Length: 396
Image 1 (cartoon, rainbow, N blue to C red):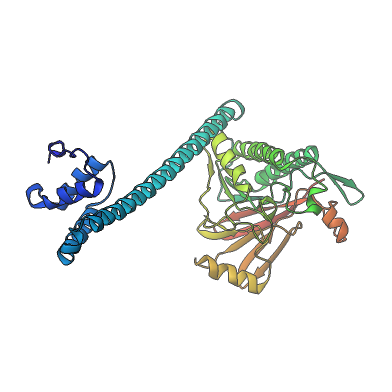
Image 2 (cartoon, one colour; image 1 turned 30 degrees about the vertical axis):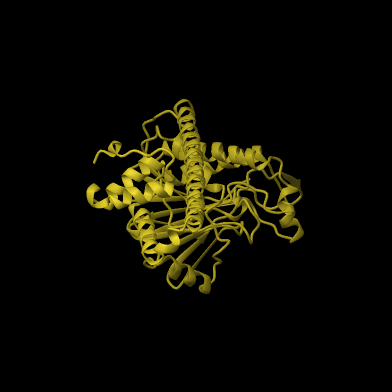
């Protein structure tokens, strides 16, 4: 249908145009054709339903009150009312269109920013993390390397413990050496790195903030660098390195009551590592979680759960709740952290391994609560039979 055949008459109001064009519906064809013509003439984007209903209303009113409507004053008043309603609808449509355009512009800017960041991270990876040919043993053994409670950004020095960014780096290097030693002992072929949360100290309450040396932004930078370096170094020692992660409570960005589970800064570290380690074909970073607080994965056909531990304590009740909530088959093992000490137990035939912390004790919280623990992490050796060795790796 050529809509240009229909013109608006001089001095004709919106309502008059609508009534005139609608009355020609049988000549024009379908109501959709009528709507196309009217939207073109009125510069609107209404559906055919709107014009059809409006015309039917005009017709019913005319038939029911023909004598009154033909009266000049009443007719003018009615037209004015209809015109006011049309203006309201038009303004509403323009407001909605402006809001939609703003949202589209904002989304485009965000996508552009994310794309630029990913390109920048890839550029960093190209210069910092060059490709390599890993050296590894051939065996049926795999390793699980836990990385938990780094609390990067915290700094304290007292008789119960010392910690800062430099100490954290030294302990990670020590941990890496011990992991490689364990791998050689068991001739491990593949490595499964599990980031169990609290990579940063965060700023969740005053007791934490008083021991922070770096702000949260600097903490994220440190964590991105340290964790990526650690994973990269492991990639040189194993056939394949798989990386799984969950978020911890220290990386939340709001108070405990108001914080959303999906808004935790630990996830940024995984995103950074995935983009910077693209050159390393044997490093596979799994960033698709069931939930930010739960990662499920298989090793040697056995199901493992990874949680931080702030929502799941090592009790029969909480373990049962977790398994039922996940809606999956019963896991072989649950990996946890949060408590800052290594532990191993078994609950209803489910092995539960708790990894320690890189920082150990000495912060304000542990001092106030008279808590002491050595810096430690957990390393496991697995084969087709499951976990065959558990190493609580104590660090200095």
